[in-house]
Length: 521
Image (cartoon, rainbow, N blue to C red; front, side):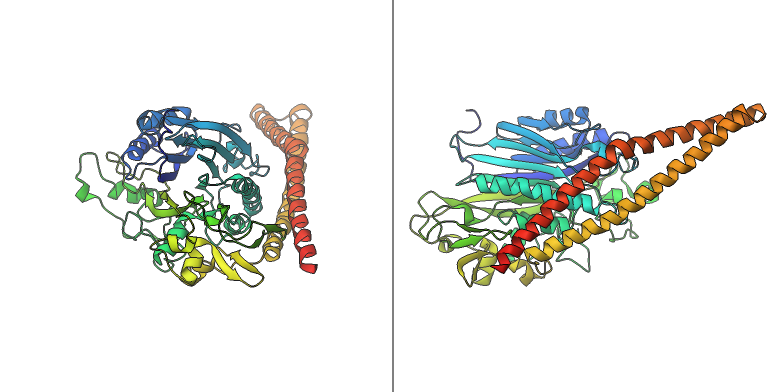
């Protein structure tokens, strides 16, 4: 099979939100073509690329054409009225693909938000990089619901993170040996947010590669700007931000762009930077998550393991790692795509990319794994890096955030019941939002009915002048259209949302009951 003769010891992964919404995003075609060229020029060159908001088929074909020399295999995913915007480029053959839409994804009546029409979901690809059964990469690409002022869609993002965690957990449980599970995407969730913590807590095998790199080097890894792409007063949590950076020209006002963007033909040295650009929107919301832990090795020394829902699982006895086995580790992680367009002078997207190199490190025969991970932190730092922490009642126990706590990266990880209670609280708040939405829908229907009845009376009963009759007829037509849309949403769409919420609530409460029953034993 072409392209899979030699097993790679390193796999380079890149994820980027392209900001490629047709008729909305300025300079879209020129920017996305340049993104394709920059992918080829990346150092190191990526083997797997996940794109979000790459909606236009023409734009994707341009990127395909630019990257075909290094990424000959590709797939653009389609779902929903406008498409998912998700796309994958690969150095190796793609064996299987699927796209699963999220049950909860915004409202069709929120026309200026548009998430419902994007058909957001989980795009999956099974990429084969070798001939053996375990020489595969399960690649998941996603884009969660966008963040808007208020908390109207928080429940939707939480639900999407819950669904995503089930896909990742299933894939990580099936993998073995050299198989790799990777999640790429724009989660629209910061490291302290509930959707992010759901993924970290309920999929213990999947790790944030940026955070893992930070733990390994005991400091946040720097982006291409030399560390200036951070919020000054919060560099630990927001290290490696990909959205809202003052270095991104799309965070500037229109007047600032008109004044400081480089004009065609101007030298690079004349690039300006507005002094008044704030850092209030700086966020790290784009991620590469991967199974960079040694727990999948069958012969690693490990004791009974309890999963996050309280069911005990014996992962095997205690023995040494066999010759040829190994672990995937994070070699490097950086923020990329920060250089501006060579002609337009603008940033390539309103996001920066995340670029990660995963390295496979073999373990010698009969030698404990802790002695083979060279140049890693020792003691508590080593346990934090490998994902293993000594705990009473078991020989080893997964504790992902230990090192993050030592670095001041994230708040303390709650136990499962606390996290489930937090999800249930979000569901309760969402119920109040749905009640308010239902009240406003009935109010709109009432007003539309009154306007329609008044227009009919004015047109057919009262002898009003011709221009007034036209205005009354127009008002009646608009009222009829609004009433029809609200009726359509109330009959066919909102019941679907309610059903999805009920299913989600049942799953969460059932998980909590399982935890309570285990705790009471």
